[in-house]
Length: 96
Picture (cartoon, rainbow, N blue to C red):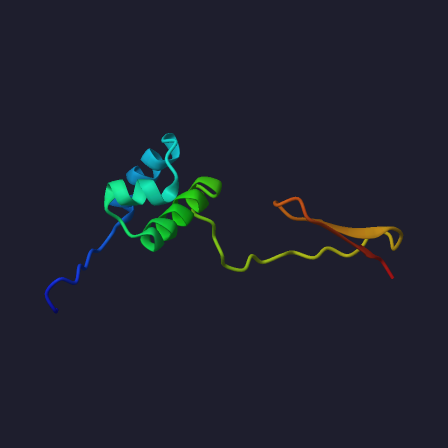
């Protein structure tokens, strides 16, 4: 590696606490980056990851495999089929 070129490997463990410091401060991004000696593009990358992790905290493990459904014979052919997903999406299909 040529002299004068910096290479740093940033990790979540080292960058997330810095992002918390930034959010608690009243400093503009450029000034914060200058004071912390971190390139603005690196800071922006980690700030986005940090904010995204706060919006979607580590959820419990979700099984992504197919689940076998048991289809029962219809008791009547009147009405709609309604499917409700955990995220609130509802799908209704007319019967027949």
